[in-house]
Image 1 (cartoon, helix red, strand yellow):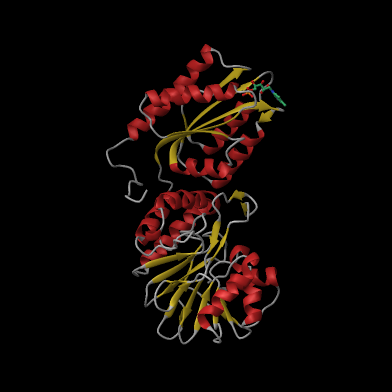
Image 2 (spheres, helix red, strand yellow):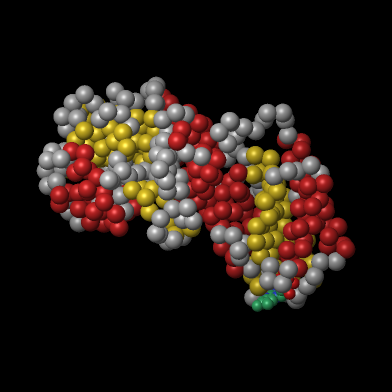
Length: 412
Ligand SMILES: Cc1cc2nc3c(=O)[nH]c(=O)nc-3n(C[C@H](O)[C@H](O)[C@H](O)COP(=O)(O)O)c2cc1C
């Protein structure tokens, strides 16, 4: 039996799971898989919301047929054109030739560039509506909440927001589809990893989208994103998290990420962490950038206020895995962090000097002085590491207020 799940008596989850792909966008590890969520409303008119990746077409089309039998699909609403959601558009159109593709001007441009011309477009813009029978759709343009054509669709009678990639996360849906059916601790981690690596760069556009949704003054009973759980019990939680993340709000804690070949730089990381712990900081995450994929490190960098970066010198530059991490941080436009820098070199350097350049660019508040040990850290180097830890702890503790944590909700 193919799994389709009722959201209401006429609205269905028709998504698929992908546990085979190693890397999302060929970049981000899918250790726990991912779901490509699609939805169907079976009314006088049948509407489908986004599709799935092209590796899942057969399963997907069979699900649709199992729900509507001989009926036609009248509308395909494309909230987002990325191929993990548009991969079955051509196949769906081939199966249902009368289908009208609903999107905005930009959607159709991108669609044609990917898949060639297709007829029967139904163009929508801000605030346009589309009746399906008992249900009515309202379109909200949310450009650059990932791609320029991105939009959301709100179903007015059941108050469902089909939100595209916004509010989505990694992790296949292993039985449970709704927020009240799954272990949210796992999905919130994977949702933050998704947000921070995929959507986070566009925080200001997320803020604009949230404001737009708020200004519409609509009640939202269900958030139906294109990845991860469907939020029917606590849609307000995921909205709040998105609000906090896109505003750059952080928790008290420190991420120490380093690149080290022979362990000397790593010793400095451990010494800084120990001191932070002595000073009462509990959230301390040390990452070897060669071992942990940067998507996990970025996710924690998004979460915590303190960032301490270390690198040995490598062919006059930073250690390559740190270089990749730093470039991703830079590209993500992460703002307002406390930063410490340490590292090692045996002759002309390259690790710490390049981290210093990064520090100048970010304009984050730096703690202590950057410390560069010659080959191996000595007492004087460890002393400087302690100063980095102390100044970091001072700043974090200064900010500490009872219950100030923006993320202290019961689901996290
Ligand atoms: C392939 C390679 C390239 C290196 N390039 C540089 C360099 O350009 N400048 C420098 O000062 N040290 C360079 N080093 C030396 C290391 O940065 C130095 O020994 C450091 O202490 C190693 O730290 P670790 O134990 O954390 O790996 C290089 C070492 C290796 C193995």
